[in-house]
Length: 148
Ligand SMILES: [Zn+2]
Image 1 (cartoon, rainbow, N blue to C red):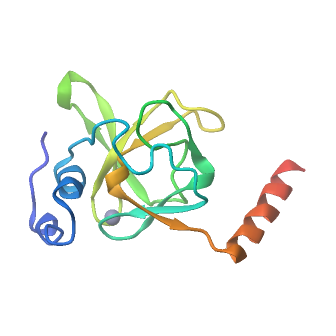
Image 2: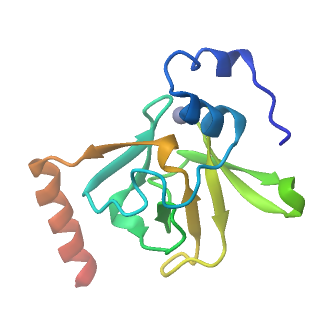
Image 3: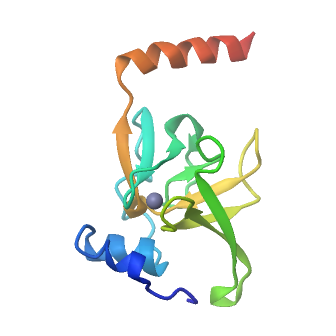
């Protein structure tokens, strides 16, 4: 791993569990089927465990069968950023939180429609916030207009 722990990382050491710190600040990967969210079906927003920035919406979550939470798109524009990752003798695209540089996971070009992208994200990098009822109504409206 090419990632060095920085001063910015150190400020998260007290806030995070050792596993959260290893994944988000040192680019470790949690074991598959170990996290809280790979089979999580809740409706809401997944936020960065470090800085609480909203990163993924449950509407874009799909069951990839990999044992990690998977999304076909990030939430909004600019929430995540990308870096080429040549570790483990592969070239992959690393996904990071654009706000705090937390390592989140990787993105692969074998996802479902409409994007064809598969964001393979560590559960421990995420915090889930359930959507409240007001947002539910808004979402139903969006879904309705998308169908027409
Ligand atoms: Zn963050």
